[in-house]
Amino acid sequence: MSRVGLLGGTFNPPHNGHLHAAVETRRALHLDAVWFVPDAMPPHKALPIDTPSPEERLAMTRLAADTVGAEVCTLELTLPAPSYTARTVSILTEQYPDDTFWWIVGSDMLLMIQNWVDSATIFRCVRIAALARHDADADSIAAHAEYLRKEHHARVDLIDVPPVEVSSTAIRDALRMGICPPELPGCVYDYIRERGLYT
Ligand code: ATP
Picture 1 (cartoon, rainbow, N blue to C red):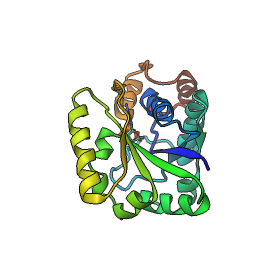
Picture 2: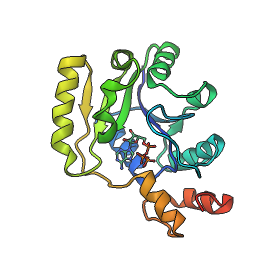
Picture 3: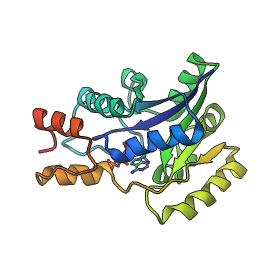
Picture 4: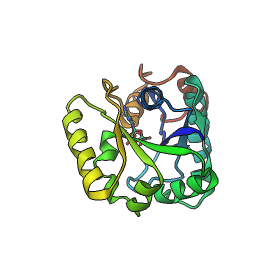
């Protein structure tokens, strides 16, 4: 009977915002584990042209997850793209019927999760843990959590911690300019340098 947080993402590349989400959710909800779940391809956004291969994103995700004692679940990389969260959580809850899962999201994803394919399955299979990505998000995610509870019978837990304002987009932009962003874990930066990614 484990309590497990699932942090789905493209991790293109993984950054301190992802690590912050994993660590703070684990702490706040007394989770036994957090699994990073890299997608094969997100349903909701196009990938930039210089996106590394799925194997390279997986390698970077493993390096980053290791720094906070999190694990990596490769399920979505073994299934056909796009990676629908409803499919992922259906499989995981069937595979691990005794465990309780949370799908961890930042505010950008919380605000649209009801529009994801088969969101009713997501809300049935897992609880949602949500964190603000910007200071200004706090009010909107609290209101949206209430809407999801009322209108979609979602079980939403807000993780009330100061945000870490970083995105993979900002990290990629910095790397393309030859800058090593402070929000990028050192081990991931070394991997990016060795492979010549995002140049
Ligand atoms: P991109 O800039 O390429 O869109 P991203 O930074 O949003 O990428 P993803 O891998 O798409 O990163 O995000 C995976 C999950 O992690 C999403 O639920 C997202 O909301 C969440 N997340 C990303 N960055 C943060 C952050 N700084 N704080 C909290 N959650 C975050």
